Image (cartoon, rainbow, N blue to C red; front, side, top):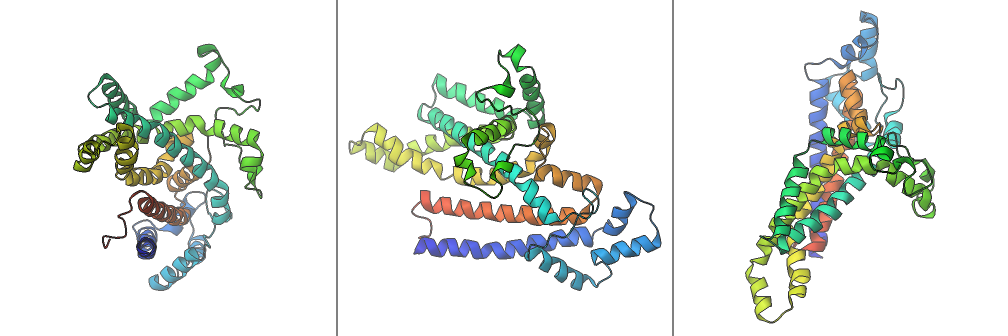
Amino acid sequence: MERLKYLTKRILMAFPVLWLGTSMTWFIIYQGPVDPAANLLSGNERLTEAKYEAARQSLGLDQQPLEHYVDWSTSLYTLDLGQTWLLYPGSNVGALVVDFLPRTVWLGFWSVVIAVFIGIPLGFYAGVRSNTVADYFASVSGIVWRAMPNFWLAVILLSLLVGSEALLGFDWDTFLIDIPSGITGNPGLSYMEGDPMALFTQPGQTLAAIKKILPAALVLGSASMGNEMRIGRTAVVETKNEQYVDFARAKGVSERSIVWKHVFRNALIPLVPIVTTEAFLLIGGSVLVESVFGINGMGKLFFDAAIQGDLPLVGSLMFVFILLLLVINIVQDVLYTLIDPRVGYEGS
C-alpha cells in the first residue's frame, strides 16, 4: 500500500511538470524575439502584409496572449498537435509523430539494451574483481569508449560496414539472415502495423529490423555503456565495504550468495536514475546518429524543424518530448519500488 501511495504521488507530481514545461515552450516560441508567422513566410515566399496577417490568423496570433495560450495548451492536452508549415506543409503533426516516433523508440530501446547488458555486467565484473588486471582493463576500456564522440564513431562504423566484405571477410548486408537489410535507412517496422504481435510471430522480419538498427544503436548507446560501466563498478566496490556485507560474511554466508543477494541488488539502486535519465538523453542525442545512418526519426524531425524555422512544429514536438521524459521518470519510480523495498516507507 505504501508503495502504491508513493507511485500515485509521483504520477500526480508529473502534471504540474507537464504544465510548466508546456507553458515555457509556449512563452519561448510565441512570446520570444522570433515572430513565428514572419519566420514561416520568409523561408519560402515573399513576405507581404496580407500573407503575414493570414499566417498570424492561422497561428492564432491575432488573439490576446492569454486566449492564445489557453487554446494552444488545450489543443496539445487533447493531442491535437496541429499542422506543419515548412517541412511537410499541411501535414498533421500527430500523423508525423505516429510515423516517426516508432523508429526513434526502436533505436532508443536497443541503445539502452546494449548499454545495460554490456555496460552494467562489465562494471559489476570489474567491481567484484577490483584492483586486478581485469578491473584495470575494463575501467580503461569504459573511459576510452565513453570518450569517443558519437558522430565520429558513427562515421567510422559506417565506413567499416560498407567495406565489411573486404575488411572483415563477410557482407554485413546479408550477414546472419537472408533478408537484405542494408546499412543505412529506416528500420523496416511496417510489418507490425495493425498487428503488434508480429514482433513475435514474424521473427525473420524482427531480426531484420534489429540488424538494421544495430549499428546506430551501438553508436548511440556507447557513451551510456561506458558511464554505466564506471558507475556500476563504483557502486559494487562501495557496497562490498558496507557493514551488512561483512556481517553476512561473518555469519558464514557463501561469497556467491553475498554477491548475488546483497551486493548486486543494492548496487543496482544508484544505476536506476542513470539508466532512465540517459534513456531520454538518447532520444535527444539521436539527431546526429539518425542523420548519419539515414533514419527518419523524431530527433531528425525536430532538428529539421528547428533549422528551417518551423516553430509551431518545434512546439508540438517539445510537448511530445516532455511527455516522453515524464513517462521515463515514472518508469524510474516503478523500478525503484521493485529494486529497493525501502522506497515508499520513508515518507518520500
